[in-house]
Image 1 (cartoon, rainbow, N blue to C red):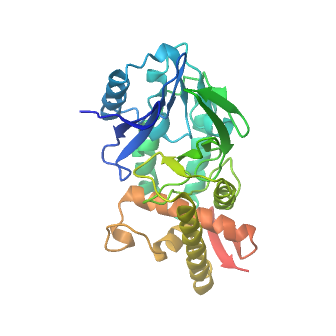
Image 2 (cartoon, helix red, strand yellow; image 1 turned 90 degrees about the vertical axis):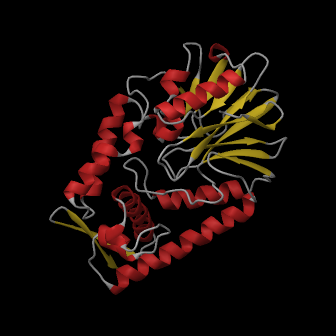
Length: 328
């Protein structure tokens, strides 16, 4: 049974379960307006998500003909059901760099580039194929033929339900992730940019240079906002500014750890560097990591190496199609 909850006047949270996923569920938000409403994010293109989202919309008496959709970012737990839930009358908002990852004409080329870069990290080929074939981000992504998107980025505003929402581009977690700021209410929809009991994954993107550097800049940018209420896309909320400070400290520690490995063992592949870093996961050692979690860990490692390279702390060499890192 889906139980929607009014988190602010005319703003409802629809819990959408994410089966077999450590995120557990998506906080899908519905802002009800007199003439038009706004749905923020959708869930995987998966039956459990489908049933929960549509049950929640039905419970709230939502007509999609009168409802627009805003996607905070490209990940399929946020976008997968979009083509099914949007009506022909719905406007669908997303920023451009993220849109390119979900529309067929650009999506498959970007995925090819992503696979090519990961193949250079030292991940075993059979492991990379398993990830590519089974990754939920691809399996449950939206129909690539759907291309009816409306550009939304920093400075753009939407007015719905008596609220004025200002879009803030916060790249890092994805190339053009969006947060939404309601100045009068001092409330921010944070998407996956700021989560409170899990750390957003920061990986390397073919269409975003130095993703970790951009993420840290974005964190500092939104920290300047006088946010009293944060509405994240997953799990519970918390102290917005304290959480940002914790995230900044977390990545400072990780950067130091990554640099230490490179200095102690010059010439390692990213796959091996990741295996020497510490991770909060229920596994005895690196060999015992689930394949999907190894892929995420290597992506995180790459983003930290990119940052260290941009700061002049490490250098990258390509030899025999593989990436190796050395201290500067």
